[in-house]
Length: 179
Image (cartoon, rainbow, N blue to C red; front, side, top):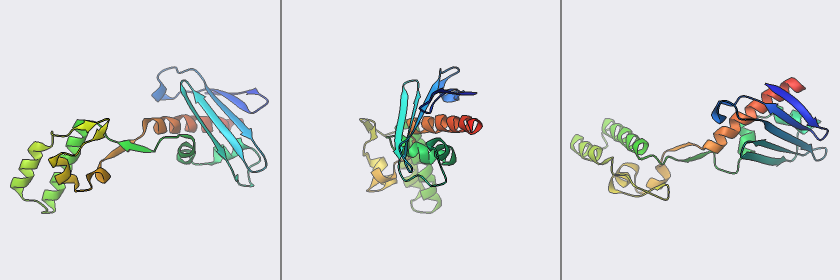
């Protein structure tokens, strides 16, 4: 892992290994701009991905935006820099079916449904449909997840957010050695 300052304007070039990007992904460019005594901008570019955020009201303990960046929690930084949500709804029919079956077992265990009813709905868990990537209401979905079923759809971590966390963590690790 190498960290090289490539300009006087606090731009760094990293040759880092991020497994999610494949064996060799090229370079990560991180640009840090201190905008004043208490604010700064961070922009990270990696392949076709780019994340940017201006942080205001920096703690007085930090003279440079780089120091602030290294000291912050990776998930906090990714949450600020990535425009997408942290999680997105699961859109794989097999995963939804397994999730529904798991809920049926819990309902049966808590005696919320009878065995015969559980068997019937278990046979219907394959009947899930999606419209534009979102789960559609079907009788089995409504029965197991409830009348406000859309609030109970399982979610997974957003791939863009997960990748940003990996890249940000790698940049932070490399920067720690530069200070």
